[in-house]
Amino acid sequence: AERFQREIAVAARLQHPHLVPLLTAGVVTSTGVPWFSMPFVEGESLRDLLARDRELGIETAIRITREVADALDCAHAQGVVHRDIKPENILLSRGHALVADFGIARALHEGTGRLTATGVSIGTPAYMSPEQAEMSGLDIDTRSDIYSLGVLLYELLAGSTPFDAK
Image (cartoon, rainbow, N blue to C red; front, side, top):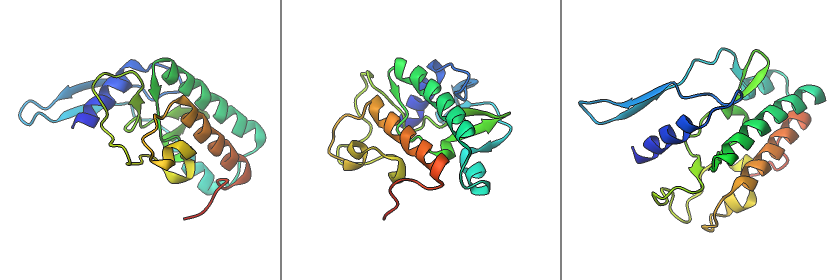
């Protein structure tokens, strides 16, 4: 519930054309369970597109990457690191990319303490930066999202992630 409450707070302050916005939020009175709503995004995930077209053309790959980078720049300016940039979290609507799922995002300057314990890795291994995968307790910052974005661009152009191992 605490992580969910934080996702609501993070999503509420991020406003950008390439981010899926938060519409409204609240708490179920009888149970105390928090909820929020986001708009339905008509289209598909980038993962769905890649399943059909294993690799994308350079122009399309660059456009999608630029839009995701612009959205991440907005989040980073607000002190938020996404921590799970991957094709499943990029939605495509009318030819444009929308970054979704700030469920494991972490506000860089929040004063509520850590919700993820040291030695616990959160994210998707194929897209994680080395410091994120290392689980050393090092603070993850915006560079981790940039690394993941580079992995994403590689996949869009080559049809697979650069490091494919167990």
